[in-house]
Image (tube, rainbow, N blue to C red; front, side, top):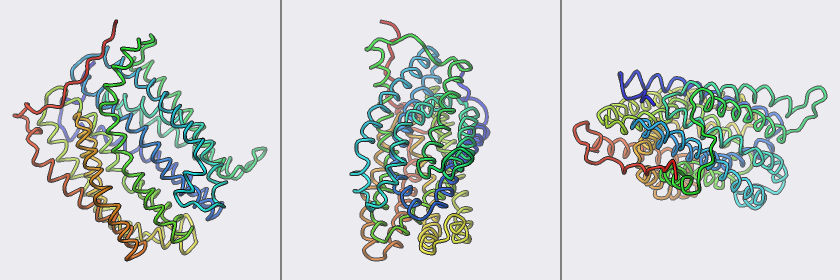
Length: 460
């Protein structure tokens, strides 16, 4: 298997990887915003209900993305080493692993809807709405996780175009079906929040079919021979050596949102709704850093496997610079238009106020947050996931939680949002400084490579 990312100009390669990912991430976020817009038309109660589901859905999505990160890191480095059969075995076994994980998580989720969201601060009158949404979402979780892992294998090959097209297809289906199922049309009854969940699951079915079809018919990455238990365990151990720390790293952000949501609940339903709206808009504002971080992992993985360390350093320098530029642009844009943007989704004055405060203050730190995303993804691609996890834990436990709690006591929602901004800035600065001083990224120094990948026994 050819290592597509180990030759050519670094900036050009990163651009080719990132541009399709910008479009793909934009498509996913567009359907998320469309979901929020349509649900907001149902009322503030429904918007608050879906705002409570956002951190939980983010946690489960982060687990899936962590699995995908493990696949991308391990597969990219094996591609750099030129072992195609091993790539096929790892890709196939990663899909089996994702199915097993879905079975466990969806079962636990269905059994804990009411106690979980009650502990997050949801009022009793919101629980039936949340139950309507999450019961369907849990049942359709397999259609989220399996294609996400499959698309990670495609990105590890240097192919970001097809995963982006697949995400675009899903977003288009969701946006078209959403209003029909939420509000009703012709013989289709109005299903409210249940309709939003069904539309999401329906669109994900298309992703699953497209992802598996391309993996098999185009890339020939799937094997249809059942592995022995020893082979399967060896593959899963290799994938989870990066996947488990990556899952933990990815959980930091939704856990932060969950903690912030519980703090915001004391200020009323409208404050929670405004925070949920701002969180959705924030994801759109971070589209370029998200695309860069999704692209940097496969790039550094292939080049690390091929022992081209200077290309790894150069890719990080360029990525950090792009994140800072984008963060500056978004800070100016949102700082001058936040109330108007929030009012497009909900005209409740308290909802608009809460969302506007967030969108004016927190974007100051988006450039630094992009550096954190990129640094984490690069460390995972290098096979150093524990360093990425340590950086994220430092941000959550030592900075964000104590600052947000103290800020809420002293300054209300201003203090909560200010804690988010300050935490992002401090960790982004630390990530930049730390990476700039690491000798393992110098092309002439090769002694501090990541641990060798566990060998996958392909035959008993």
